[in-house]
Length: 482
Image 1 (tube, rainbow, N blue to C red):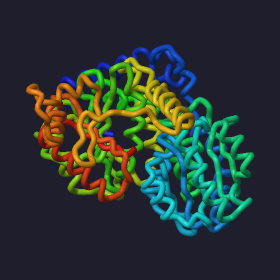
Image 2 (image 1 turned 30 degrees about the vertical axis):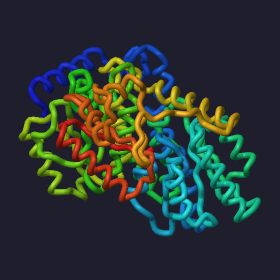
Image 3 (image 1 turned 90 degrees about the horizontal axis):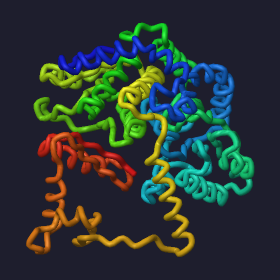
Image 4 (image 1 turned 135 degrees about the horizontal axis):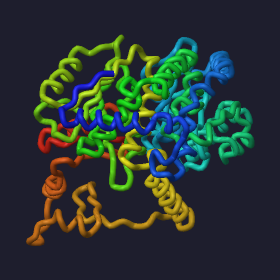
C-alpha cells in the first residue's frame, strides 16, 4: 500500500501512527481492550480477529460440504439474507462467477416485490439450493423470504422441501430451531462475538464460497497473510490495517470524510461490501465516514476538499484508464491511497485489512465501531409497523405535501415549508425538487435510496442523476438499492 497526501494531512496521519506506537494501541486492540474505543462492550465484538485461524480448523468440513453440493447437481444456489449476511458472498459470486459443475450463485437481499419475482423467475426452483443467512434468526426480511420460497418449493416437491435448504445462523437462534423443524439439509453456525458486517471470513462468507466451489483454502491463506501483517510484531508504519485506519480516522476528524472507492473492474463489487462496513461502523454520534462507491467520474478539479480516494488496483486486471484517472487525482493534490490486490483471492485479505482499519479509524474518531444503534432502532420501528399491519390490515397513513401525476413528495412540515414559495402559490414538482437540491452545500453528500428492482436500466438512470448532481454541486454522491 502506498499513499500520496497533502502535507498537513500527512503530518496528522504521521502523528496518529506515532501515538498508536507510543501507547501500544495495536497490542491493546489484539488484547481486546475496550478503552481503545469508548470503554463500552467493544471487547464482546472482536471475534473477527481470530476467525481466520478458527476457519482453518473447519476447512475439511467446508471442503466436504462443497463436494456434497457439487454431487447433488443443483442448477442454482440462492442466498436469502440482508446486509452483512449477503454482501460478502455477493462480492465473491460476482467476482469469480460460476465454477465448473457447481451451481450458479445468486444473492437476494431485497424485499422489493419486483426484485423477488425476478429471482423467482431466474432460477429453477426445483433444482435450487436455498441458503438462509441470518445471525440472530429474527431479522424480518430473510424470514419473509424463507417463508415465501419454502412454500413455493414445498408445492413442487412436498415433504422433501426442507432438504433443499441450508441455514447459517448463530447457535441457539430461532432460525436454528426452525431449520430443525423444517428438516434443513445443513445448519452452519456463526460466531456470537462477530457482528454481521465483520462476518465475511466466518461461515457467513465461507459457506457460500464453498457452495460456489471456490478454493476456500486459498481464500484463507490470503486472509491469514494479511492478518499476520496486522499483528503487533509488524512495525506500525508497515502495518497495512493500522496505516489505512489512521488515514481514514484522521480524514474523519479533519473534514476529509468522503471515502471515494475506485476498485479495478474485476473487483468492482468490493465497493458495496466496503460501503456497508464503513458506513454502518462509523455513522453514529454525529460522526461518520461516508463511503462513495461507483460514482461517475468527473475532472479532478471538480471534486471538493472533503475526500480521500482509495484505489484498489487488481494487478491481474489493470484498467489503464483508471491508472490515468488516479494519477490525475494525485497531480491535482487530492489524497490518494493505492492498494495492490494481486489476484481475486486477495479479496479475503482485503476483508481483514478493512475490518482492522475500520476498528482503528473508529478509535481515532472516538466511537464504538461495532455497535449499530440506528440499525436496531430501524428493526424496532419495522416490527412496530408490521405488528400494526397484522392487527389492523393497514399501515399508518402518511400524507404527501405535494402530488403530481403519480409522484408523491413526503417531508415533515418544517422541511416542506422551506421548499414551497413564500407567496403561497402552488409550486411544480420540478420547482420543489430544485428547491430541495438547492439545500446542498459544500461538505454535504447526495444519496439516492432506490426502493426499486436492481437492474441495468434503473442503474443507468440513477447513475445519470448522480452525475448531474456531482457536476452541478460538486459534492459526493451515493446510490443504494433498498
